[in-house]
Image 1 (cartoon, rainbow, N blue to C red):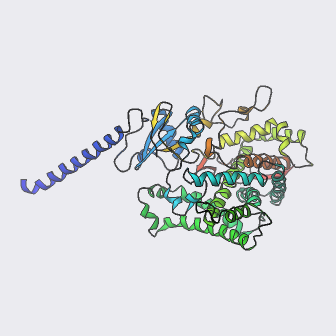
Image 2: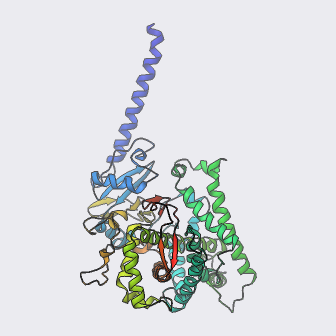
Image 3: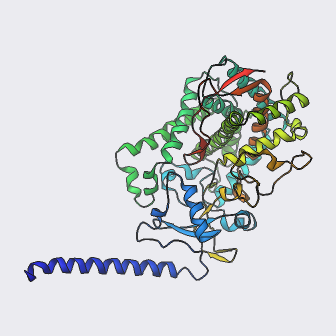
Length: 497
């Protein structure tokens, strides 16, 4: 009997010894970071701190850990050393004051698998990123970003959008597709030199693909790609995400090919033509970063950046008008007093419309579209608020900790436009208002987004009164986490004013 039991005893002893060794190794790894490494929960071997994280609501997990470990803390996501920054001071120091130190991007196998590391958003910090971001900013400005020429396009598109809303004839409808189509058309006019009709089936298909891509990107399986990259080559239902992205890229490749077939070097129609010019200028430069592959992924980045966040914010704005009819009424009154109902709003009207401007800013603060911005990575060793952060550490700027900070905002978890108004009703800029992130990686299209939001929102509220369909409860106003924060699907009714 003793001999029969011996293997079991030995197996138990060996298992206990193995666990002890792994625990000691984990402690050693953690301690070797240095005494000034940010605190955080103890990481388990192999999986790190993933048991502390809810991948269905990742931002909420970070907020809970902050209450225990402070404004700067560390977590391990599998083998990845990650630093979470909370509060305006910590985020400003990291992304603005020490932007050179924190402007790199971590490896994201899911995006690298389909080539997005060749664009701007997910490219590593270096020569290619600097050259392409500089070119993108310069070219977007040349095509009117922040200028009167693009404002005219936005106003024209706002007119199309209002007509499409009115065609719903007061029946309940989901505004998602129409808002996406309208906002997309503004960036399309710059990149592609044209807009798409709201009935264009192929374009609507692409908008659906983008939405599906965000949904699939938030699935738990994506968190395992970094630990098990071979999963991306294994057949299975998870391959649907890559199929969706490739279909989206195929749509863009078709547009780029049409431009290539009709390109005339003497005529610059749009961003794609400008990129072809740079390719031609640099064709003999072996170090040039201008190629058709780069063009494809930069186009993909700009299209997503110029569509999703702005259209999402507009959805939040309509949702907030449903929940706050008294605020909608105040916006109506200001529009009638400043603009009237006979002309479309212009960006110049904004300075005379403090309440409407405050409402739009509060929508961005409350909606908190990108609660964690995009991940950063330290380009070199740095020190943030006394903590030593090594080169190669992933940085999560927790924008929620700023946009919902109770020490900054009077009612952080309520929709309260007065956050941006003084006692005289004048608009007040808030330094902690950072929905576009900050520093060198700040959103390329911030100026365009601000213009889109003001003109589209004001044009819609100028023309319509929005209300909840009969016999339906108020739609949910808690966020849906799909790589970003978006409203749950909802329907609206409208009445022409």
